[in-house]
Image (cartoon, rainbow, N blue to C red; front, side, top):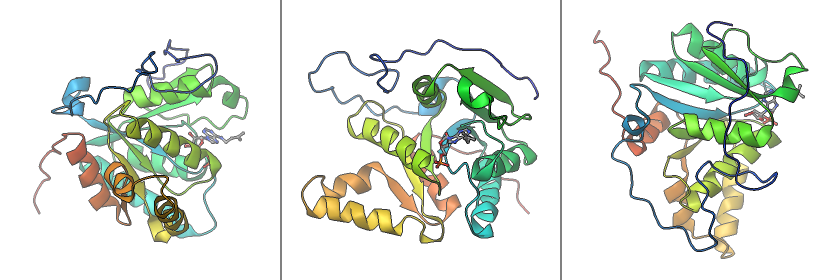
Length: 238
Ligand SMILES: CC(C)=CCNc1ncnc2c1ncn2[C@@H]1O[C@H](COP(=O)(O)O)[C@@H](O)[C@H]1O
């Protein structure tokens, strides 16, 4: 572990054991719509954009998932982007972290203390935060990142993405949310979301306005960058 940060960090969690973003309003009145930031990255005060990535702790059945995640890692670093993620060395999570690190990018892990017992923490991260529980973890991941990205994964991935997407819908943050539909992995979920809209539980345009879905990593990263007001550095020609 290089420059590891081991220890807890105080992160405001709204009420009891309920999850929520760091800035959840205390009042029950509808939250005012915050103005879109000129640049979320500039507001955070660092040069690089950080994307919070949710993905499988398992590798998936087919090699294409791992291969695509490696490609995503290189695409991220080419745009001057780093990642915030769950801190594990296993599955797609570990594959992505390894790819970003190998390309020279920043990788920040945030892991709840109880998961340390499983010895799955990545030992070579730029920084690893160890926090007391899952709610602190999600709040800190959100605080550290400028955008959110879901990749193929299981229940944990879906839960994490849907939570930050819900926060976005309720204007608790304005950071862009994306879903990488690798190999059509999420086609079934997207069809179900159409059904949810058809049945009148959400406006179809709202789904599209608050979650950017793409099959191709580079194109999706460009949309997330634009949504966060981030201008990637010019790439060397040739
Ligand atoms: C008990 C055990 C060995 C767990 C595996 N180790 C893990 N280490 C770190 N983060 C995880 C782990 N499992 C799930 N997560 C979280 O849930 C998501 C993955 O869950 P899933 O595999 O999609 O459902 C990740 O984005 C991560 O934030």
